[in-house]
Image (tube, rainbow, N blue to C red; front, side, top):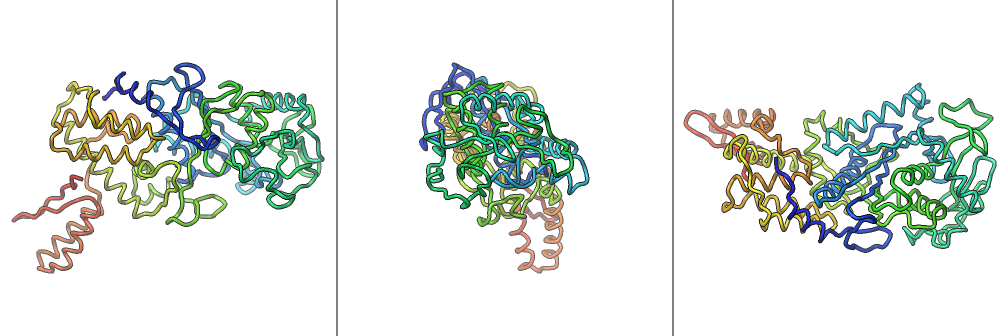
Length: 484
């Protein structure tokens, strides 16, 4: 297995630049404390199965973490599991998503949370996303959340309404700095949120009271203010600071978190501590359907990883598709695009399997520290995680006739420490010809034997589009993966 060498790590560390949504600039990355990187990822609300748009965000976080590890940093990565407190409206109104799902499934909120947490981590594993160092469930950190609300109360920025305790955003002069076009000055009451008893349109709940008019909730706790449950935003601040400190190096999530969730995290965290909550705020763009609407549970157009698997795709083929688009650019999903990604990954696996056979089992691979391919690959990653350029560099290496098999194998496996395509396990078994291609090839042979050449040529083109060429001989044909 290829091992990242110190020279490559230094090269990447010295040049790594990342874009921050807060500063709106790309700057050289350096952690707060030496070699240690404290990274927090906004995790799933576990009220339903994640869709592939959700998983794109976690693939982006995984690539970020792999790049930092490749650069030689010691990364402590934490992710929350929101299993309570995320309401159906940004206005802090409506049902808790967990309670609503529980009612629909005729289960308890605890059972729903456990079910969809397991599904999320199963999907993450199938996508070869590295396990997090810390997985933080909101329901297991109620004391920390109550303590943070009390800390804010001591600052004089909390007020009480009939339905909960709220943060007064008028005390934050730079509220909305993460998204300057969405500050409170641009919001009129009722324009985005229902005011209720809130003093300002952007004020948000820190603790919600259980309703005395409704049945007892599955998830509720006593607090200094009354029985209830935490607000969504307070969860991440409390848990991140408990384990990673008051200032994070990196805070990651989807762009949908920018205007409300992350804006409110910043307001409450920095009010409590007086120091910046995170030095880099990084956000992944949406996955859209055919370049039109974003994929989302509320949009009614979700596609899960199981859907792709049922259609015959390998989850790592979706990972390859994601790598072909920069994390800050929308990714237009289509089955045609996924098929192309599948064909490319199939060809890559075939080449790796071929090189492994050529080099021989157990052979020591060259380090290739001075390879221009490694240099350009690292330059791409250092350019704010430019994975499309990195993948393009990989294919330039694959096609280079001047590079020997051992060097190619060593470099490709080193690249895969970041790309995460599990190429180390590539073998002939993993590159068997798909059943559909075999069927098309047989049908084409029968048409050709019947001298129906126009029809057979159309099938040949379909086979080529699937990543294979047909080599005809006197007694039959052979299917060969295309080389590039």
